[in-house]
Image 1: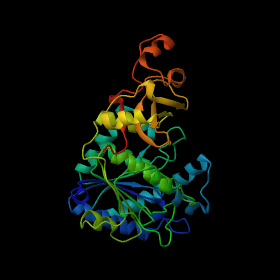
Image 2: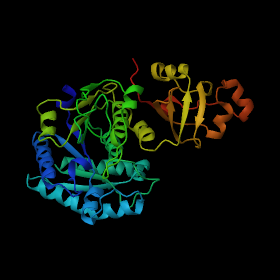
Image 3: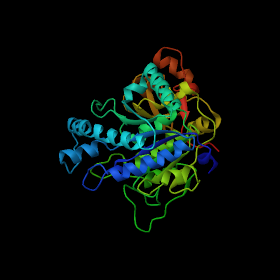
Image 4: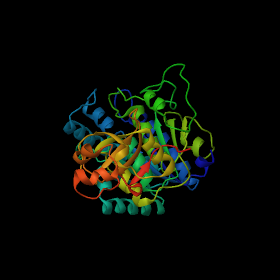
Length: 377
């Protein structure tokens, strides 16, 4: 628990289910309780970045919609209606505790461009220095499918990387990751207090969500945990509907929920984090057991001889996932070959590649362009 109590900079993501009522309206009492808890952390000298869902849910309530629409223009309309209401509620309630709030709306495109990525980081650092709480959301009113993060769990994980956070806390309406976890708590199911490794078995327990106002579900929370723990950042999944859950966790050191233990305390180089984590993988490379061991235990580059199968269409320089025989993602990296080229040379040794492609063989993914996402005992 020292990771948690010693955390100075904390990213807190709060889900729609925590912030809205059963009637799809913004729950002002929940916002009040959350901001009170955030104020406790700020008073204790912590820096808090708040990633909030709820704009679409709040907008649905105003518009009288009972079911979350699928069409992106309707989602954008709901977000446009709800975002102002949501931010106004945060600003008013934080102001009551003597804390200023700043609204930041992001798309994936803001983080995939290096200059904009650095600008976002500098802006948020300046806000934290002034004691301001950045309130961050995906810019749902303009995001298209190509530039969406997908859900705020992923956005919060990327923000933790961007800001060199010491802890990520995901607040939802369940008590933690359960032995039979999904989109809602199951009566009698045991919450797993500590997850030291994200295994394929654990991933099979995680499901999406069927809630009308939400997206992602438990599967997206596991993806977020994999991303941040790979960079030495612990993550806690806790029930945000419980009072004082944040201050009890961070200030009193009382774990309520599930702690995902980081792979190590060592942070990945900043530029490498940007290269590997901000873009969405364009494809997957399935590798054999020998290649997996060489990558995870020996820190080697991926060679064509270890590639068994190529999934998707991508160009050289694109980001791809590296998966094992069971389909479990264990690494990400920038690939040197296109999918067409890799389909021709998969499984071949370096001496054969020159004959096929008529140029000098290279690593499929150089180790400097790769991040390992699993524990390597």
